Length: 115
Length: 117
Image (cartoon, rainbow over all chains, first blue to last red; front, side, top):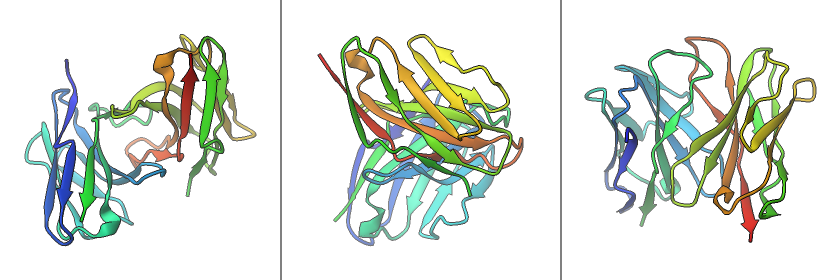
């Protein structure tokens, strides 16, 4: 089945130690998103790619970076994780046409713990 | 900025009964889209139903329907004949209409639904 895959499902890192989360998709969607979801809070968009066009949300900290080497893969890099970065990170995709009623397809998320 | 409010952190329903989850939003836009997403425990979020603001008719998908009140900026989700598999966190989300503009989905904080056998 076509899907959005996130690896790993659980990631533990140390304070200040760089960490990379990965997302892959078999849907061949042009748009990929990264959301941060803290406990008991709403998912919050960090950034998204439309093809290779990177779009950063204004309030996304500089500590968060992203790479999209090809259509299928997208990475979230946290350069110096702090305790406040512990959260569930959700990857999502949506189809080619930039239409506001497009459904977003979500991966299962990576739960990041910072020690 | 748009905001989405879900005033019920938790709800419970008996199997086969009906439950309504509330959502209100704030926007100055006239054209937009509203969504309900379901996030089961340890599983990915999936779309339950969507509503275009310019459509007066309420969206329906099998046992799921919405009550969209544009003037009141209210968008509630009704689940009929609740099943054990409906147990999940439900998120209400908003998106502007402007094509080619922001891709942002604005989410509420979610409502945790428990279905009792």
